[in-house]
Amino acid sequence: MPEGHTVHRVAVLFRDVFVGHPVEASSPQGRFRDGAELISGQVMSDAWAVGKQLFVSWSGGMVLRVHLGIYGAWSVAGDTSESSIGAPRTRREEGFRRAAEDSFPPEPIGQVRLRLLSDAVVADLRGPTACELLTPDEASDLMATLGPDPLVGKPAKNKARFVEKFQASSTPIGVALMNQKMVSGIGNVYRAELLFRHRLDPWQPAKSLTQEQLEDLWDDWTVLLKQGVKTGVMVTRGDLTPAGRRKALRSSSWRHYVYKRTGSPCLACGTPIAMAEMATRKLYYCPQCQDATPPTGG
Ligand SMILES: [Zn+2]
Image (cartoon, rainbow, N blue to C red; front, side, top):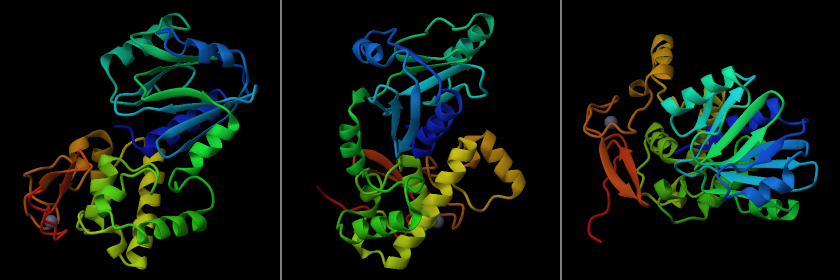
């Protein structure tokens, strides 16, 4: 599932290639035809992310909101080095990019909910959980419900909001970190890795963490997110040599301490990494380092 870094990268790309230009919008699949017609031909005014949500404002005043969900992705072609942002790249998307080199714009491939097209770049959105037009007020109201994002607004205020929200919550920390109303942009990979990096028991209540622990957690999330936006890859191991880090950027088996490493020895203590269901998603952790035992019974 795309996490916050992915959506911030889409916003950066859109600011780079679309903002300030008239953009044609269409819905080849048809499901967003009415919305696309309303904004088509307008100048894209701005694009920004809050956590996993992308917001795009238009010269006519409307705001497009896109949430990629688990399967959503943008395929991008034309005059840009990006090719795919979101769900893992597929052969189909490679084909899309090659087709664009032969004739621009290329034919849409698959179920394209929304196509954005400028003179130089095409971006096709497939499989989003949400793709809708909002008024500016509706967009503001929605953004106000989202937890702090390290890359949006004032850093000190964000950190204070994060600490305050977590100090007030008796939800297990592993659940709270995935709640987008508590903090924006953390998904299953960053959740498991942050908990391991801080040697936290995922089942301990959020409010049981000290102020210092919460501030450290926020600072670390800020660092990881910035790295993710820069590289497009979630490398969460902090024990890599420069050569190891280069390998991790290419190969997922080098990237994480615990994520998808069930049964493999913990990189810190050698205990087999464990997996449990938490809030309907798989949680990976080291029972020893994190002093963690899932609650038993129903
Ligand atoms: Zn361990």
